[in-house]
Amino acid sequence: MAKAVELLHTKGLTASNFTGQDFLTISDFHSTEIMYLLKQAIKLKKEQKLGVTHKHLNGKVLGMIFDKASTRTRVSFEVGIVQLGGNPIYLNTKDTQLGRGESVADTAKVLSRYVDAVMIRTFAHNTIEEFAAHADIPVINGLTDLHHPTQVMADLMTILEHKGRLKGLKLCYVGDGNNNMTHSLLEGAAKVGMDIAVASPFGYEPNQMIRDHAKLVAKQNGSSVIITNSADEAIQDADVVVTDVWASMGEEDEFEARVEAFKPYQVNSKLCEKAKDDFMFMHCLPAHRGEEVTAEILDGPHSVVFDEAENRLHAQKAIMLALMEEN
Ligand code: CP
Ligand code: NVA
Image 1 (spheres, helix red, strand yellow):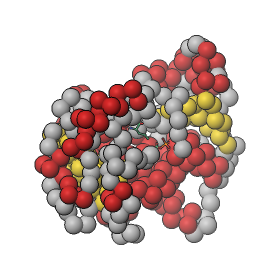
Image 2: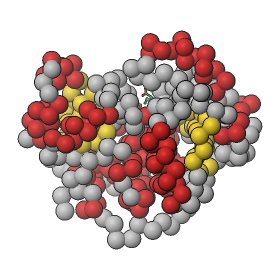
Image 3: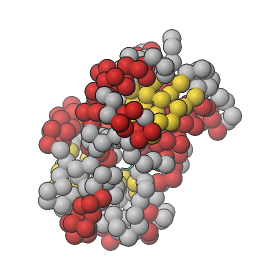
Image 4: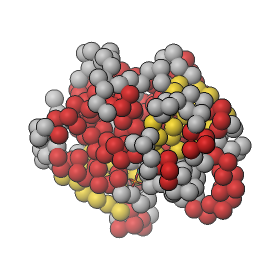
């Protein structure tokens, strides 16, 4: 761990560049802004380990709306806002008037009068876009069916910590190509100049618009995007190997059909022989040992999944500070 982090061009950027903005997808931000946030996250982590605290969000309140289950996202946002001097309010949609049909727009307008930012975990991505369009406060995406950007910020931070750089590395994702993790990884890798190869079964490839856009951005940043049905091809010489569940939240009914399609896409020792000797294995968690990944890999020496989970806290503190701090 703790390799020297590459010097990156983020000169001139400060938290004030982000104040009041939403954090809905990685592609909403410039490469230098992503790098700035990653560097801030690493700095906050180091400071926290040294006992240095920042109460810059003293008195601020983060509303947290959950339409789906969560362990990491909920706890890391709650702990993060408290560590920065603020307070969280947890709202399970079912317990609010949203759950009884109050409109997203009215809810956004009302919450804007009470809290300083809102984090939302929901199903359709356009729900969070609609919320953000009607809110006067920053809105943070804590996972939609289409994107999981705060997870991918933690993932990029973890790679940067372990490898000391991002640009020029190859990330391989094997599994469900048409889910939130893959889409945010495509956007994130392209932004920071990492090569990314996604291998998924026929019919489970990434969203066409997201992959086309990622290809364009990757080209601008000197990297490449490969979408394939061959796990062997995708993993060849990979520095980072990533997978995720075969059925995401909301897709539970499709599980049986998906298992058949995804079986050849399990991340196991045999497949990983084709990655670089020092490859890192990542998974956003929760994981299903014996399905998308074997226990041998998930609990093995290449796995950094618990650093990755920890880094949700630090990456999100950097994001909250940037969006919510008054300058
Ligand atoms: N990785 C992740 O978002 O975990 P939770 O579903 O536990 O929040
Ligand atoms: N793709 C998974 C990620 C969970 C954090 C899901 O949406 O369920």
